[in-house]
Image 1 (cartoon, rainbow, N blue to C red):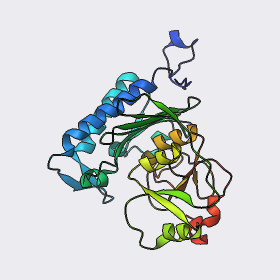
Image 2 (image 1 turned 180 degrees about the vertical axis):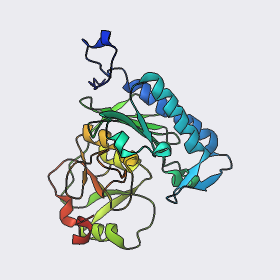
Image 3 (image 1 turned 120 degrees about the vertical axis):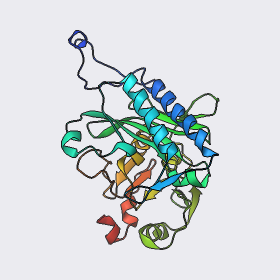
Amino acid sequence: MCTLVLAMNLPAENNNNSPTFESTLEPVVRIARAAGNKILEYYESELSVVAKDDDTPLTEADLAANQIIIDQLRAITPDIPILTEESCGIPFIERNEWDTYWLVDPLDGTREFIKRNGEFSVNIALIQQGSPVLGVVHAPVLEVTYWACIGGGAWKQQANEAPQSIKVRTAPDNEITVAKSRAPLNGGLLNCFLNKLGQYNVVSMGSALKSCLVAEGRADLYAKLGPTSEWDTGAAQCIVEQAGGHVTDTRMQDLRYNTRESLLNPHFFVFGAGNRNWADYLDHEAREL
């Protein structure tokens, strides 16, 4: 399905053969689904929720899924480091030495999980030299999985149906479709941005699934003008890009990973085909963020 050449420290006897990830994507899909199944065990039960240092919620499901992913990724790729939302305290002086690493959000959309609306996902990305080269986004309640790797296209599988190749679409000149969260807009940068778009339709979704709506051509644009972290976007960025779309900052430059101490993303756009400059719709204040 995909062939990826990785820079890895291989045993001497393997040095004459280029290591590939031709068979790695399928196991990673299985890992994401295994984590999703564990999350479902907690989904209908009484939840114990605590607040992390950044005031975001943390549940037992986050921690259980995190452990499954770490254990199973280490089993298939023992030489590749892993950075997850729940184990993100690795200093940049160490991370800066990583050419290739796994970037994981074991439960993206914990607030959606707590609300029990089903719109949360397991996100697993492989980052190489600052760019996502493999990505899996799995939504266990919705029974949908998206995956991609560089050069292999982007795919979606609904429940047990056959996987389908997905592509972005070209945004129409008028009345584009915008993916956004279900939280109401109360002014702010995003509201100003959307007002400048003119007439538009909205499709609401939680977590990284908003980006996947762009990847499969159900939405033209997702603008995030607020805080996110790198594990929120890595997997979906690979899927969007392999579907023919883009994930950029507000200067229209591709999002990059592990380039500084902070793991926070800049504000960003997710969009499909076409040559529209979405930054043109930003206020000056938003362009500087």
